[in-house]
Image (tube, rainbow, N blue to C red):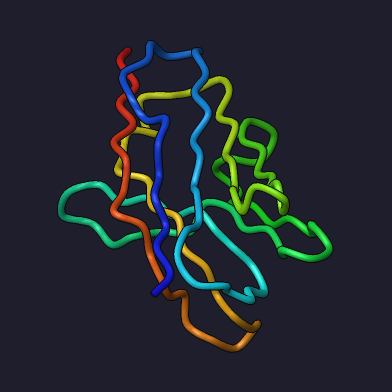
Length: 119
């Protein structure tokens, strides 16, 4: 079974930075892409950023373009999200996920890590 484990969340002041990590463990897993999503209470989980595992092609939600950077280390089976110029509106639980193809669902998911940005 494949497990995704997020880390790096916390409390930061507006304008600050955090770096999230998503480590993959378990059986060998051939993935097409990995992504970051976030969710606030009472709202749906939304897309933040994604990266194709082999080529490193990235995609971002408009709300984070220019502030967040997604990357991956294939040797460490780990994905990262560097978040700069954080805003209170970025407060959410951040989840990582993987997909095995461009037409597949995002699965598996991590357990989530809380990011809180104070004003």
